[in-house]
Length: 88
Image 1 (cartoon, rainbow, N blue to C red):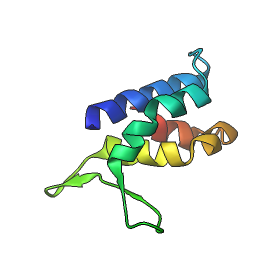
Image 2 (cartoon, one colour):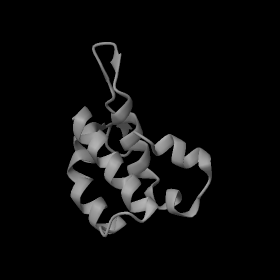
Image 3 (cartoon, one colour):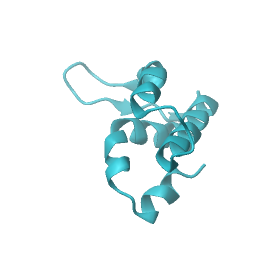
Image 4 (cartoon, rainbow, N blue to C red):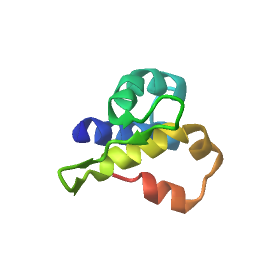
């Protein structure tokens, strides 16, 4: 899943930079299942990313989780900080 998250982040970067014809809605539909696979939590509580496995932190999983949750925000915020976070 770590690699799939990396690919999803790269595709998101292309959409954000305007180098892709894919829309944010298409990207969301394509990666919703991946998001559900990496998310867990008790019913009625907010989910969290399953990015730590046997003491190893998987950065791309964490980043993808954050991007998916805040995807519209990244299109409003054009700061360099945002783009640096999204670079893979």
